[in-house]
Length: 194
Image 1: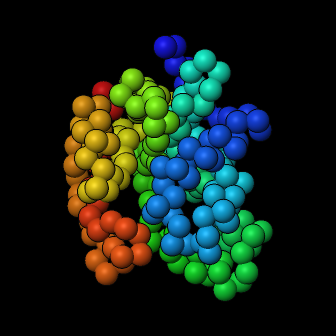
Image 2: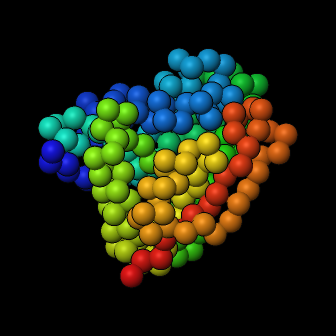
């Protein structure tokens, strides 16, 4: 299987990138939205191609890796964007919930904003390829590290990150908010660039 990875996606690919992103992260994000359809639509519409690496095989989108750059992540979750589909009250709630999950930029560090691979293509090296592509983006920017967070209920992803040279640098807990998001603990992991 020949996998190509590049920055950005075409307008025709937006729906598939959004589906993949929501499939991977919707269970964590759903608390911010009134229902799955609204959440998925907001995420898909808010995707920012310049902050997304896309893996393709045989012309199909098979993996996505978002990252933070210039004060923004893979998905625009600004007040203006939230208000395109949510009431003022629902927008306030969504902003509060999403802020809890946000991981901002850090000097000298490319912070990844979600990595996911199509379920039927996992175990084929696509995730590793996306992480390598992210390291190239970081090197082009002059960063010294790539950083991501992984939830405790995803040991397969954590194993991938360790194989790719990431080491745990911190742990965190959502405490009482764990019921809202469906997970409690997470690890922050970093990979130093050579």
